[in-house]
Length: 308
Image (cartoon, rainbow, N blue to C red):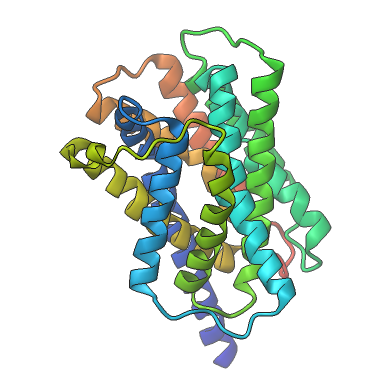
């Protein structure tokens, strides 16, 4: 009976983890709309800085108690997570967009689950193993993402931009594995996310001096700008990073990262509903393939010791 109850608790916990990852990706899939609106009055680095400062403020207000008793090794892990997940990932992605097309960046960055899985094999001994379902899901999802991104357009290779996009995917893989390490420290997820944001904003400050950052506070009086920044800061940053870190703690880095495949699907749906952009047959087929790839990636391998 005890084993049965324990098994049900684990299943309920993993269901919550999957639902949390889905919630996160749904919000992240709609952020492009807010970013597109803000780009009319803000530079990419300004949007990045303001959204994470807002996120840090929100997390501090929600959980003001400081993390205590961390070792220097743990602090280095928090700093590395902030550097990777907040600073380097978004800077690499934004810089990639200045060299190559958004379609290229979208597809290449979506390879992050593969990087996460490969890195996990070098970090963990408890077996987030790479089974056939994961690789098959990756191939199917990438085929779907390619149909979505390159519908009506030819793929244009740009070594610098594509390399930066590839670097962003690799950096996100590092972040996902670092958050799994952090989840083992036993601190509340809001505290750990706030600590990661603190280091991320700290590392971001030097880049502001080289990327044309402007304060111009009068821009925040514009209701449209303010609402979109609040959505990015409070929703897509504070809430989503906390929920993502929570999901990683339950499912592991590999299973959670596979949900990244779903972000472009949400983007397509949001484009149709909000911006009234057409859904072509190629996009519809790509959406179905991407969802199929996500489902395949979440299939359980045979071993009992696998996480997720």
